[in-house]
Length: 568
Image (cartoon, rainbow, N blue to C red; front, side, top):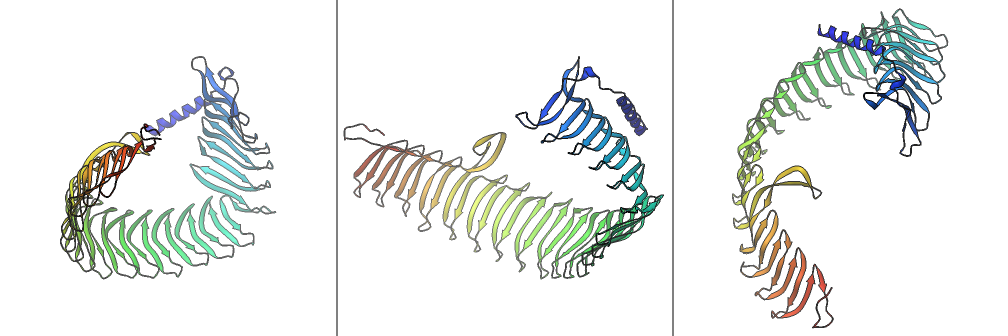
């Protein structure tokens, strides 16, 4: 009832449309549109719709002409308020008519004709509410008849066909007969047989040297029975069963040596039952089952050399149950379970000798809880904690001889708090501190409006220790990832500083001092925002001043005499 109502409304709409006429008072003055900014290359000309209530609009109305960039008329359309309504004519560059179609509010309706460049009619037909309908006639470029089709309820019936030769022999009459196309050397390219206007019976396609490339048959216009496809050399490539135009039955794909690549079955267009794929060497690649085109049950995958690579389970195309991956010697490499296409539960990975490499659990596809990584000798390598797939909690790293080398903490996948790194002998190497901050996201140094990013940055005290004597060799403070405040670098022993520097926002700012091994001064330099600014003093080996210079914003100031003021 709903469909009948919609059809009634559409027909009513079209009847109303047919009654619409383009009135002169609804046309603006002629409008010109141009291809170029200089308004020298005319693209189109016509009028827009106007009325007293709405005034002028930009809706195309009435006749419009369209031109190529070279100024040649290409198309003529009739519009009713921005919709093609009436005759549409397309032209060849020679100004001869190429095509004419009648439209009703953008919908092809009524007659359709097409000509070649010599003015010979080649297509004549009819549309009904946008769909081809009734008798369609086709002609060769020389004017001889080619074919007649009849469209009934969207099905095309071929009623007659004539060969393109001097005799114009009719090979299909009243829907019965054949169509045969030839290569220039006379070899048959394609052969169709027709019955009651529809393709029926044998179909063949051949290469120019006569080798069969496709073989099959039609039934009432639809592919039916076995279809075979051949390589250029004539070897069978594919064998497919059709039933009423749908894949139904055996499906086979072959390698060039005629060994089977793929073997399976279709039912009503969907894969069903057991499917097998093979490598080109004849060994099996994978085997599994389909139900209604979806992977189902246990699947087996193999190495090219024949060993099992992994076993899998599916439930209506979703990964489920236990999945096991193997080394070539048959030992397990990785094992775990899926639930609803997501990793879920314990997953383990092993080295080839059977030693555990990694293990941990998933929850709905994301790592969850405690995870472990191991060295090949079985000693713990990393220990970590996850929450919702992100590192969250304490992190430990060890050497193969069980020495702790890293200890820290993650929060939602980001380093947070104090992190300690150790040398392989267990002595402290470095202590860093991190802080998680949220800031405006930046792209090319420009803040992106409305976008923020959460990151982990160095923030707080920092210490580093020497590999020689394991005493402190550097210390300082970070602020939001940048050096800030006073920093110290030490000579071996960790007592006498080699450099004392001051930073602000990652740039040298304040006094920079360098000292000798006995603590005697070598340089004293003043910085401001990363540039020398103020006194620059160098000392001799006795710690006495030997050079004094003045800088401003990185530029040394000069004075002519000892009493003069400094100037750039």
